Image (cartoon, rainbow over all chains, first blue to last red; front, side, top):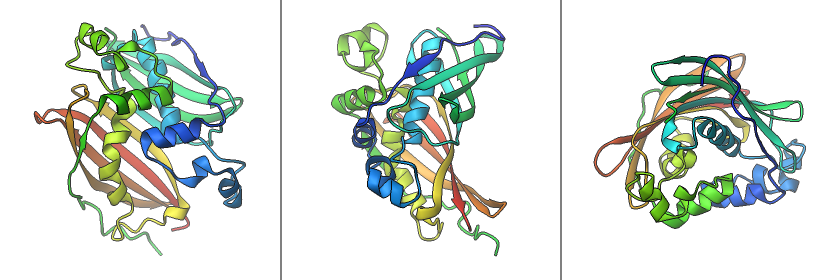
Length: 128
Length: 146
């Protein structure tokens, strides 16, 4: 991985029930994620993805880019902005900002259609 | 009225979490991890892990019991109905594996205000049973209309 390289794009479409499975796996049962009616009552378009699920997709894409070993991902910093929703494809992209002594810094983000759901993210990798 | 930052520096009791193989598998399936090291002990050992490793973002699972009380602490004073998770950072150390006991402590790193929004920044440190650091987290929550 060298400066300017793009990481392989990761594309995943969370299905309608994904937020329920992620709620069970993570323990975060905030109703904005699992109750469509509640989400709309508080002014959201529908129930929304957990930000930390979307961050896990960014983690997955960057670890894969470094060869797939989870130990390669040393650090990940993200900002959550636009809300992610189920039943819409997430694309994670990234570009190597710098590489020195085996440590790679990637500028990375996740989008759904034109909506950036994770932006200004930075991954630090040590490819195996 | 400026945001109340009197809880800055407050720390919370440590939370212990015992990592189980089936919980790792449940989490890994939910986030779409398909690397066999997360599901098969033989594959994990072949890859040099002590046991089945947790995906890096499993940090949210074992940290939750420390972060919940911090975020909902009345002295910190977050209006949960107006809160959004604004940002997150993790720095990973020693891998976490099934059978580990992870102890996480959380503290309020900073409370500030910008453009009528409160920024509540928490830091967490998680260590395994040998005292090795496994992850350090920075959790930024933004509260509208403080």
